[in-house]
Amino acid sequence: MSRSEQVPLSQSIDRFIRSELAQRGDEAAAIDIRELHCKKHGRFFRVDLPSGAPRRLFVKQRDHGAYQAEGLQPEFEALRRITAKVEATPLRETIPQPFALDLERNILAVALVPGRDPMRKLYLAAITGVGLASAKRWLAASGAWLGQFQVATATGAAIDLEAELARAQGQLEALRLLGPRHVEALANLLEEPEPARLPEVEVHGDFALRNLLVSGDRDVHVIDWEHAVPGHALVDVCEFMSNLMLPARYLAGPRNLVELSRAFAGAWWAAVDGALEIDPGATMRAAAAGAIARMSAHEQTGVGGTVWRRVFGATAEAVLQLDFTAQASGGNTQATSQRLRTTATQR
Image (cartoon, rainbow, N blue to C red; front, side, top):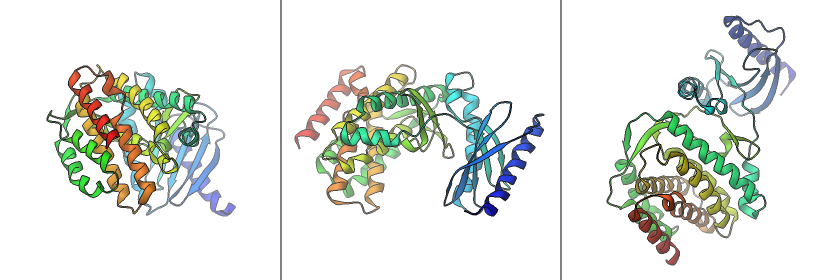
């Protein structure tokens, strides 16, 4: 990318930031703008301010006509709504504070949060076992963060899962050839007779490894909120665990992935248990439905053969061995979970 292309955009961002600061009564003598990276549909910058709060901004600039440009306003509005809900909690420091939005130039500025991308570390732990203990600690921290976030943003309403479970039932037939023993175990979960309702909370909508930044093994920050909407409490759990299973394509079995997924799910359950009205049986069925939906979507992309069966098996195995079922009160749910695990293993 030539210098002549970079200068006008940097100047545009400089004017945008200065204008916003002036409206706040803060005149900046110098603004340092550094391009972090450039992708197909936009560019990303770090802006250092000489004073005030925040001192560092993360700026997204989307190309005109790019589909991501439509996500800038929803992300800005979602961050305003969500940061207001968590204002009085420690979560406030873990979510980017919205700074300013320029729809004419497709520019969004938010406070820059600290941390590094943990994806490579997790993949090494999943594939080889190296660094497994450290990966489990930050996955547990991620699960605890999500549970605390859901408790802080719960609306008090509940969402009926009947339509979601019915959709998953309809997708099962196409998946039976891929991993029959796991499909049958998940199918049994969906058919449990108890009603399935989960509390409504704020949903990130893309809660995955690529959108988590970690400092050490326990400090978690969450970025990219353009898909955030209210929804039920298992949406982000299922999204995260489905993405967690992707390293399975490199594995002969899901051993490390099950350990990692249980660290995440166990910490999530410990954070919400008693604070939200979540039935463990409904949680298991929602997790099964979410896994089936994700696997069905991947199956339609043409991934097949042994590789896909490993991904399918690892995902189903993780759902069937979630730690929160063992921690739940009530013997029926625990007995059902144990029966399903045994069935899946023996088939």
